[in-house]
Length: 128
Image 1 (cartoon, helix red, strand yellow):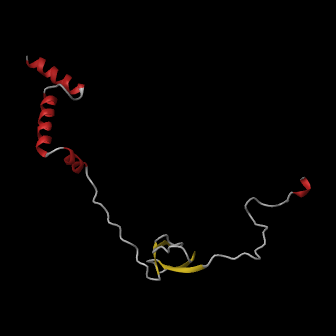
Image 2 (cartoon, rainbow, N blue to C red):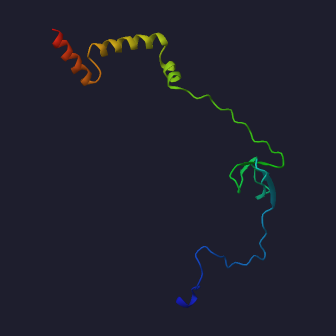
Image 3 (cartoon, helix red, strand yellow):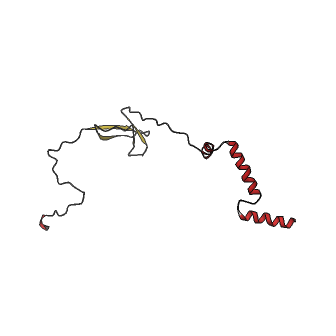
């Protein structure tokens, strides 16, 4: 068994198959030009959907297709803010009522950080 092994072969490095009789897929050269005037070509299958934009191998900028393919513009949704999401659940009148209620509880010492209430209690005892 040891006599049949291939010595000196790298893993995944080279193929020992012969290329005779192999028919390659049809290919096309697609040209791109970036904003910095770098031009390059990418080899793609004839059946592939050719992208309108490709990253420039020199500068990394977005290069547009020379053949005139226009990138499709995606409709972007406006960013929803916290206020927008809050208004989906409650009306402004309800929010004002909740705010008044919570402020009364906070000022009365029923809610909120304990250290604030202790300071208010000490002041109330000194005044009494």
